[in-house]
Length: 192
Image (cartoon, rainbow, N blue to C red; front, side):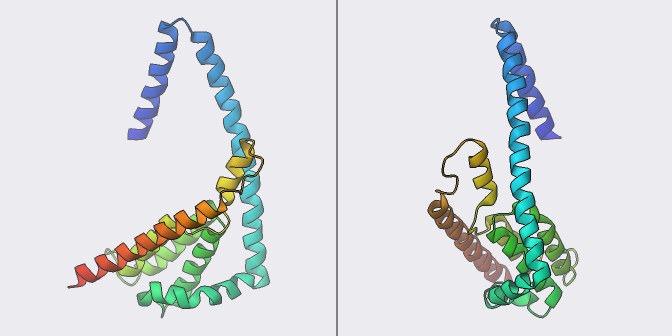
């Protein structure tokens, strides 16, 4: 609700300022141009998301997702020691992490919600350490292939949309590291 008021206020103020300055036609032209650019951006991002979501589905049906889950297993068991006994929760967490590695935030969201649902069963009404860790890892999301950012850059006309990979790897590794460290420290502090 608050964002609706803020955005509506910004639009109304922009229109009023444009009219007061005698530039109403420029405001109208900018609105039409912005709407057109938004539709083009949404379509290009939708295409990229469909491609990578399809890749994830092929990985799942071919068994490659399960192999990736086994590969991520040791790391995930260290991060989620309270959930390592729940195979379904660990599979959901692994699928969420796999989608995040591919930069598919939209595909990772339902997988993360499923993992959160499974983790919350062990401590109803209270966020467990494992659930907090899931939220941190999902939010920081280390990415190997930032598909969403790459598709936005490609839609904006970038000649090399993925030339940002080293910066993305460094930034996401640092954010995940800081988040995991903070989560582990907070868990230890609140436990004592």
